[in-house]
Image (cartoon, rainbow, N blue to C red; front, side):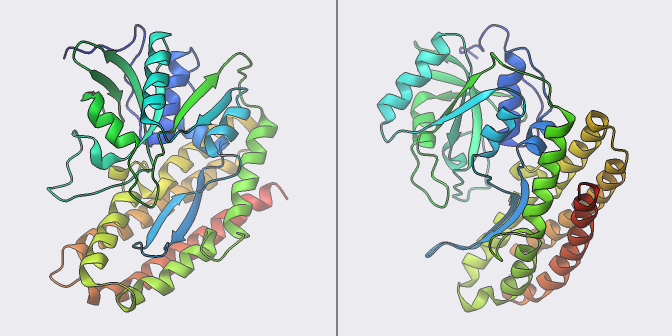
Amino acid sequence: MTVQPLTGFKSLTTHHCVTGSMRHVYAFNGHDVSEELLLGLGEGVGFMYWQAKGQPPFLGGRTSPSPSMEEVAGQRTGVKIEIHRTASSRKARQSLIGMLAAGQPVMVGVDMGFLPYFDFGGEEYHFGGHDVVVCGYDAATEQVLIAERDALHPVSMTDLEKARGSTFQPFPPKNAWFTFDFSNFHVPTADETHLAIANQATQMLKPPIRNMGVKGIRTAAERIPRWHEQIGSEEIRWSLFNTYILISAIGGSGGGNFRYMFSRFLSEAAMITGESRLIESASEFKRIGDAWESFADWAKTSSEAPDPTPCLSKAGEHLNNIADQEQATWDSLRKIYS
């Protein structure tokens, strides 16, 4: 491998692309905060069922607070995190090379489908909501080094620029990159941690629209059995496989639709806050994660059926069971802070 990482950069095994990338940058700057803590502090756990016009259905366990999860997690650790976007690939490239030359790894948004180290079984697959850290550059070979969840990967600058500038929906990365200011870093307080948990419980129990939160899980339970009324069998097959990818550990949720990561966050939060009841909630979210994994396995098996349409009728039972568990557990968390 010709291209080498920045001096002092260490490759870490992580679970979720966003919080894993954040952890790489935090650790490089001397603050090794767990990605579970970054996810929970950033109010990143929730649920969304969405179908944009002309697009296949999408469901996942992340939420997008305003400001963003990255910014909120930064605020609760005293780190100023800014998101930058540009329509110019030249400007995106210049900013990247400039930051690397200054000795800083760069967190960027990419479309997974243009990164050659991903294997989608010969199928074309695009997801632009993926984040990585560029931690090295070799001008002679025009290669960059990317820190992923598993290892370091050399990639041509050409492939990286395609991934950064992808226009595939529903989440085109728009050449996004992030800057971090650690000058006011602090360990998260008990009050900040309490607030993060309370806000996520509210988002799940009282969402602004019925496609989100526990209501969103029940909406998915209603709509998935009717997918055949809107889309054809091949789109159903793709949607089921995409559901499997996004819920399972393969897609970067840490497994169990982010519930395993959230369980570990609650265990860490119990130590920060001294609130022992969070340990019981952590165990409940581990069980909910198991239920989501079972649903993901069903989605994968159904996607491989000769005709996936008849399989859709089973989705409601899976999801309503999960919704019942989530309702009870989020409600228990809410009561801790009421």
